Image (tube, rainbow, N blue to C red; front, side, top):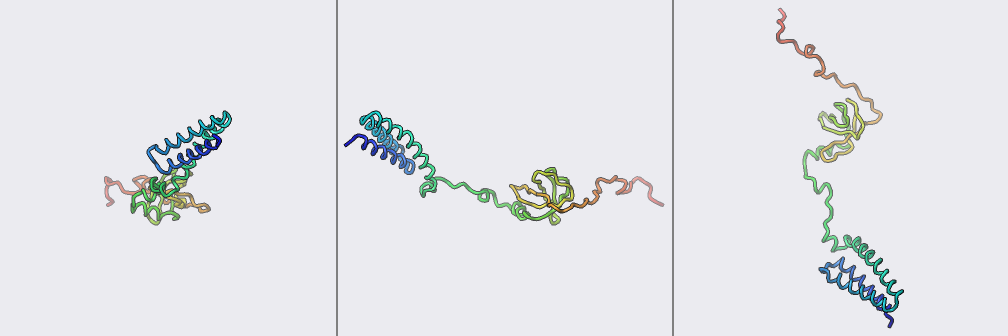
Length: 191
């Protein structure tokens, strides 16, 4: 029998053992047997002739990394891979169940009114409740209608409602002079 047939068989056995080492960890025993089989295949290839030896060597150099990488890509989808590798938890699994966060999630889709100029953060009023919010990056004028589009962590993100004109906010009594709001306590009372 020719040496190249044995070389090809040993190469196939070596590649198979390399794949088995990925799926069934054996503390390096299967990897050692795989390397020994491939080394034997290369030696038998060179006994057949230099061209056969170089062909077996090139095949081993190309196929071993390709098959091992392919095995590592397939491994997480096997039953053993799913047992060994942990699934990444979703954000809902990791975040604590917080009543404040649930209340903020309920605001998604609701419409409120900006209580101050949002550059980009500020306060909005929804159903008589003040909520700290952040715009999507654009400035929002005081009194403009906004829609809650998402809640990230504990941050409410809003977007201005298109087509709606905002009304001028009511006069802020803190911006008026104090004399126009209350009388001076040191003035003489009217007689």
